[in-house]
Length: 46
Image (cartoon, rainbow, N blue to C red; front, side, top):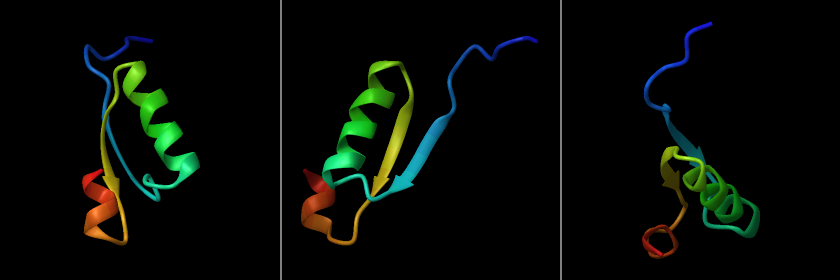
């Protein structure tokens, strides 16, 4: 199977809590781009 040249982007909700932020760091460390959703703007900006 041929692998793509670039990894896909991932969007997820709940990325500002402990588990979600750990997931975001892990995915970014292996090259994924991400978009994190949050219920509040202030937490999303962090």
